[in-house]
Image (cartoon, rainbow, N blue to C red; front, side, top):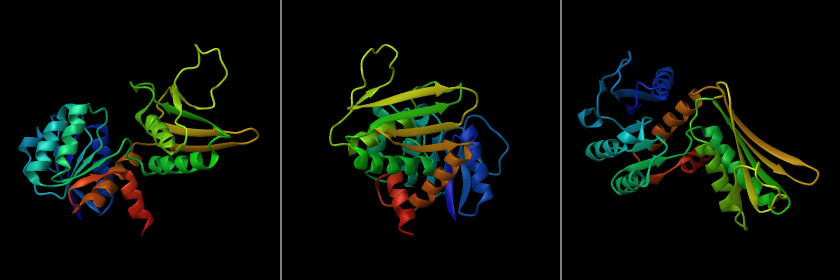
Amino acid sequence: MVRVILVGSSGRMGRAIADAAKAGDAVKIVAGVDLYKVDCDFPVFDTPDQCDIEADCVIDFSNPSVTLNVVDMCRRLGIPLVMATTGLDQDRLDALEDLSKTVAVFTSANMSLGVNLLIRLSKMAAAMLEGSFDIEIVERHHNQKLDAPSGTALALADAINETLQTKDTYVYDRQSRRERRDPHEIGISSIRGGNIVGEHEVLFAGRDEIVSLTHRATSREVFAVGALRAAEFMAGKTAGRYNMNDLIDSICQV
């Protein structure tokens, strides 16, 4: 069983991860880090520097303000890190890169296995359909989400663009554009409403056919399950950078 320290244990995602771990038998949360406390069956420390529990991996699903302290904790304890916190600035990204020289570091713009499979399938479709299909990405989220487009939509666009022979430009808003669509662009649209957990659709629109690839998250549990699978994958890994492609490859080889 993989022993995990969960940073952000009292947040929505932290509680979802703890519940998912309890429901399974592959991962055990042995400690949490959070200023706020909720009822749980493991010790919770206020800050990362206070945590001295033996573990096989750290999952950080908290806030960028804590990232540097989490990096220090992983270096001190000598254990891998699954970084699920997004919105990191360059200083924090550099800190993760430096940490990866001594311990294993896993990063992903989205912890859902399904979303990362969508990214892989979208790259395959882009390689096959390039030149005769227009590409549009539509993302839908709840009305409390602050950023638009979502990080996952941008990750989809970047992955597709890496595959294309001719690099496309991104168009976020067509309202002010009075011109025909450029064939070398990727449209990205954002919808905000209700309590939509997260939906991403990639449209490949051709002359007489449309190929649509869609992922819908109906609860936050999908991200929790992905984070736990990442922790299982990372336990015992040597120093270096890892991501969802590595995890998916390991699953496909089973």
